[in-house]
Image (tube, rainbow, N blue to C red):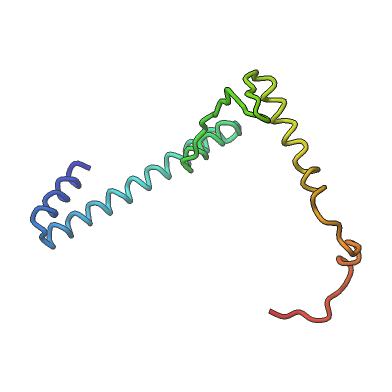
Length: 128
């Protein structure tokens, strides 16, 4: 990496096509080596942890640069009330996510046809 950086510095300073070509060649070689090394590392880690699904997912998330950051909620505002009790916050979230499906369904308009009939009907033609 030091050589790559030194070549870039020289190419920028001199603006020579030869220096730029040498820099790009070394940069591409280094990029390929890093990519191959990372791939081999993650393949080996997955093979090592093949029977441990939790560690396998940790390795996969690391390979995809996914964060395992946990967010702690200390305060929740509900109807102008600040809730700070962790059990109450958990229960409010649980209540919200348990009831979100049914409450959204209530707001949907009722169809004016039988769903089964729509599935059974065969179209006369099909066009793109």
